[in-house]
Image (cartoon, rainbow, N blue to C red; front, side, top):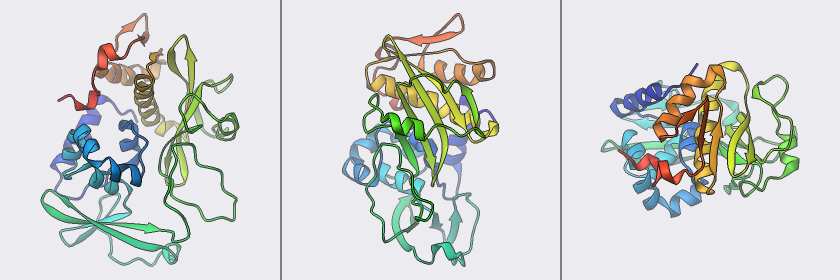
Length: 290
């Protein structure tokens, strides 16, 4: 399923008009936000993040970015005496799921559209809360899996990857891969939902320009969303690191790529989108534009 720019806007409009609690897709939040998010970072930088992403915060009806971020990580929420799961369908307040028996239930109350909303999280009492922007380490089969939803690169600093991690986290043969996983990558980045990789992207670098070497998703149906998120994130990373971007969309990607590049003001020439100096088209952060 292709996620065009128009469809993206329709999702946001629906969220802003919804009377129910909207629990944002954490992958969608991470694909838009350029900062290395974790709970501690959001707490410290809440004011500046709220100002920077004011449009998104208001779209979901929250009063600040911290509330939006927490809602994207919550397991369920209580609003108007009803309990809503991430699918936004009413669920029972109690659960018989044995998997959560040893977890602590942590709750936070935030304001959404002028009403108190209780966000609930299941947390493992034996695990820490610190997170890194580097790809999560592989876990042994007998260890408990931790929710590591977020965006990661193959090293602590973009462009300085751990080559062993790149090798370890290459997509399996069963995945749908567009592009080539061969050759040296400038870096790789990963979108993770829960404990599972949802998208793996390889980045190539030449003469100051970044491009997608490959994008891989568990199946073809989820590819277009993975591609959209990866291309958008690549634009941010190039912008933040004073690099340019170039990409030649494949036939099936043309409509989606055009919608995204048109939004950012990046021009196409002979089938290739190239922008050596992104400050000429982006200026200040594009998501601040009305």
